Length: 453
Image 1 (tube, rainbow, N blue to C red):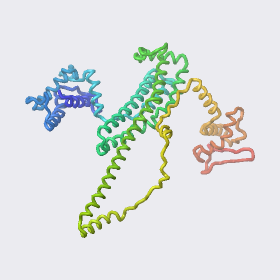
Image 2: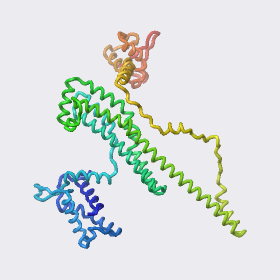
Image 3: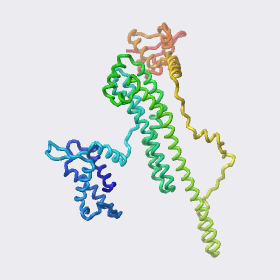
């Protein structure tokens, strides 16, 4: 059975049974199966007639498309792609994919279909960990975070394979005319997928937030730890078989951190190097094409001079007049040679080297967390200060002096120092006064903020 015909039939079957437009309300009967495969077989026959193919389906009895459809259905059933089952509703025999057949057919269907991924795997991992930290978080959130982290590696690996395939194709057909279609596809894919992978889905920029959430999950209360440990043993049987150590919960957190570290340290640099290699090859091919075209132009000038030498005087005047019309608007500009500076070998090595940030130790992470906590200890948002002032105004029903605000603690003192700035930056004057202008009353010691309720 020709592979092209089988692959086309499997893609059509998968799209009918499991694609976006699948009709789940009705089973696939024999008549529906024949109607589905008939256009595919007819297109194959027209293609085979043009190509002059010689295979087992080129026999005289296979010229009838209805007979060929029956042969294809028998072959798919014999080889285990499809299986029959009894449709009790319609009291007929229906067809469906076997389990191995569905897995392979989905792969063939995906290869022939453009990517529809929204590239949210890194953000999905971070959001799933945040959901696990909430009061209602459970083991399903941790399993989702693990699967999202694996998808991050899969996305980067697919990108590396894609660029390596482009480079191989570029080397096999080193012609700029045949490569612009691939380059245009790369630009569209970069706009759709890779731009997100390098910005909002960048593993390096999301790594710190994920590590912080993993550290918080390691410090959950004992009751929540036992609950999630038991849930993981119930819902993640694969993790129970693969984990090392006493706790599946700790093993899963460590695996998520290892996957994210691998994405930052190895996969993303390899992805960037593969993309850089492809762009350099395309750039070199474009420069080579321009040089060849420039050489052809120089040959055209030589051919013109040769033609002038062999022409008569009247023909020379006519040719020179014609060429002069194109040369008259030409403008020649020369570049300053001093503006060109070649990079040294050391500079070139530094330019192509991808630096990988070393993995910080537990002591370094603890020191960074302490420093961050110390920096944020006396940092109060203006919105919080403004909300506190409005609450006091509602309670006291009269203007409040900044000098009269409490200063019992350091945070109270900072809140009083930020009062004027918070009121000015919070929503405009209409939230603080009846009139269109804010009502500010200042004295030599303090400022007063008012609001009419």
